[in-house]
Image (cartoon, rainbow, N blue to C red; front, side, top):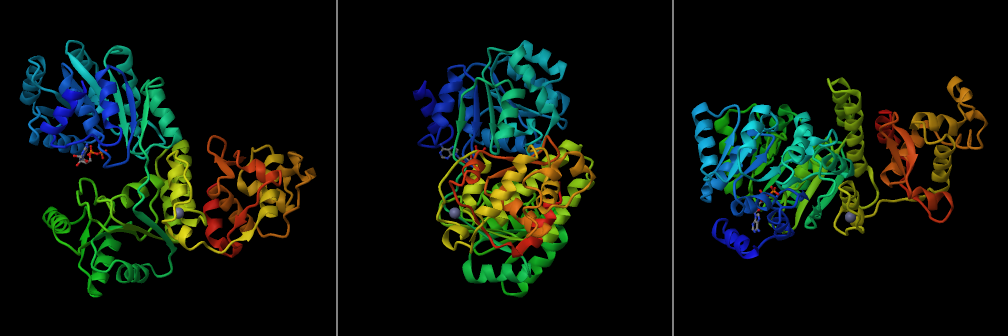
Length: 519
Ligand code: ADP
Ligand code: ZN
């Protein structure tokens, strides 16, 4: 097999070697086994199923959530001389008939479809009489409410396992925390499939986070002092601030171009083209800018506001330094945006569970901003990867000032324990501060030994401590139980007095309070 796969890699795709775990994944599908693939964006997921699709008999059915993504993949395959096609709402009926002919004659090797079409009875009937080489489920995190683009139709894809048990299935995604991963296995019926997890680390990216006071000025300083003459992307939250910031940078002598969905297509294309082909261009953009940008030497990505989740941050900052050379991810965060993002979530039409999940994601992102520990460690932990402090982030290189907060943290952790890990931060803090109310008395918690032991700190200070403990991985919010605080295994040695905890000074309590109010 490997000779054929190697040959196709070189002859059809023009690459001398497989990258990372590609060869193993290809071999797994060629054996007829299933696979779950977690690989960061740009890692080379597509070849993992495209090469087996060319080797195995029949047509490969590829599930993809977006027409733009499908068209992109199909165009690339056709450019490589592979017969591939997509069917979606925009496909004319005569093309659909032609494709059916091509499938039955065996000439079409890959067919891209949207999930809702694939699970329709009509399409499944068609597949029943078709020789299928494999099923590839791209962007598989869409199956999970935890994923950042939940698509309910993905949850029906389990039917493929039942209806076509002998056809290999591969699910692929670039973003998957532990919960998403569990959902993918469950709904896609891949419990027993081997998992191929690549590291999400981007070691050449330096992470730098600062608190906002005058964002535009701070951005200008960063670019002039650290990034002069380099290409970069600046992300803003709104179209208005895109225009505003682009104009501001131009006034100060930089080549900044705006990019957002409200600009005429011709201007967007021109700006994207200049960014890709010229040096020393800065694109100021909303998140609309990025998909399909293939520029390896982006030297910095700046976020003028905090993104709504670590997944978004990782994806956007990951556009820097694709060439492997040093690059910088710079982020400036302030309270206003945090409150704004929180309000957006609360006012959205989403279900309560969905809102809780999104608040939790927002909090996780905020933890990355607030942490005094290694930022990369926190980012990678979010993707299920444990690592040592990186030596290539601001906190590693310039550790923030800290104090021994062991006793304070012990008080908090033991109070969480004594109230049964059933209550959110506000309640726990009231108990700590000895602020009795009806509820606390009804629960009998005014008689606890921890009642009132934290009266020396303000509510704000305690909120800050809670946030820091979450950031340090000592506490978690239980999203299935109204954000109740729960202890993690890392809390044990602290409670037993075996380990110390260093905290950041509590004076920045303003930051902590606002987010903690999500409970
Ligand atoms: P992903 O879907 O994981 O984001 P892609 O499949 O789009 O990644 O691949 C990212 C880029 O890497 C593409 O330009 C692709 O052609 C290239 N690539 C993939 N595999 C290899 C390889 N083995 N050698 C060199 N380049 C590769
Ligand atoms: Zn670090």
